[in-house]
Length: 207
Picture 1 (tube, rainbow, N blue to C red):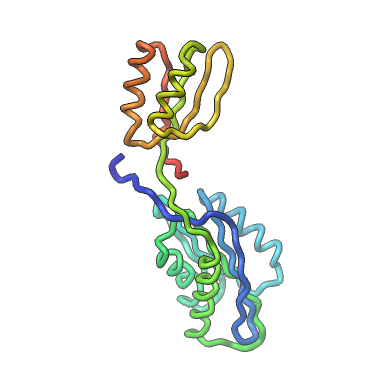
Picture 2 (tube, one colour; picture 1 turned 90 degrees about the vertical axis):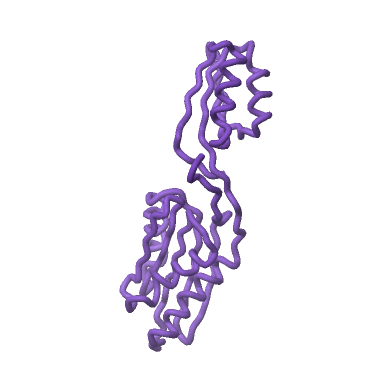
């Protein structure tokens, strides 16, 4: 489990409206898991607010991959200011977007940067920030005689149930603390005397 730590992120989608002089700023916050999520969310916003002057954003993933965009605003006034809010709250797996409708009055570099920051800040402050722990997915194939024993063992290690499939045998999928994977695997093999199938996805999932 070396290097795998819990993260802070947001619980759900939210939005706010912020006005600075004659410009309208719409702030949006999304929980995300991938770049594909970012692409989808941005496309939907650009379609819905097609008449807006700018669609500025920043995101950061648990892998520490991040990006920000000024979308035509002066450099340093929009994207980086939105990213600053994400980093101020130490968040990951988050996309923040601020859509601007220019009202005809120029704000100046300083006030413009502050307006983008405040829009992003307000939308995060309206959110529920949550802690998520890292898990690996473990899949177990067993005969029907061992069902209750397997479930009891996984409950002991606080594994989170994903799904159960029934066929000639039973296929369990659970999410488990990476630090407990070896212990669970060893006990399952001992329990079944090796007559159990175990596969582990060493890809971190946060829950």
